[in-house]
Length: 245
Image 1 (spheres, rainbow, N blue to C red):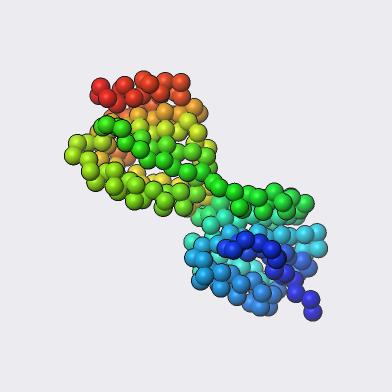
Image 2: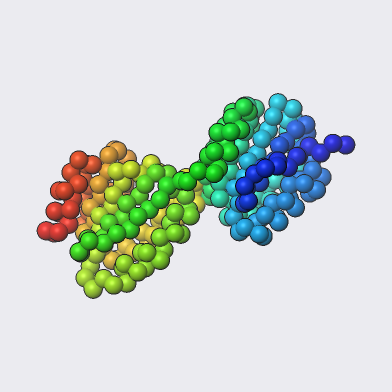
């Protein structure tokens, strides 16, 4: 019997691709998908995945559905990003629901959008810049942030805050911030607030969207600091408020 899961070729290191067709069984999972993912995560720590469900895909057997669940739980934090190619309505709905709880970013593409899916997997996501000028520490959040963006600034934050002899005056710049990709990134953000919530004396949040203003009001409940929101065209006012407060 022909395999119902085919491994894609010519993908970058750390990226796995699988094409699904027919009715996928537990045997297909055990012989093709599970060993490949186990090896890749052992080698790279975290991987990106491209999953293609073409028109010949008919669904899963009960055994395969169980294997899919246990694989996801076993490697809950093993995926960096996941792209799913499919025009199957019930599958697209299931992927949307999974994206609400899975810790990594998951993005849906149509069956013919392979190039776009590969590009999304390979492109850079958002970034966070940490800078200090005088008494003001600026954290600039840019683009859509994944969990790795927070991991990359751990050392920078530790170095900046460890040298503070006075309570921190913090400028949180959200003018180019587009949100979080996956629950993992949001969890990292909340952990950051928890770890440093006692350090700031003043927090100025500067943004350009209504939800960012609402986020500032919620932030004020969790930090031991005076907080204030400024619209994006009042950057100078935010700096002045921090220096004079």
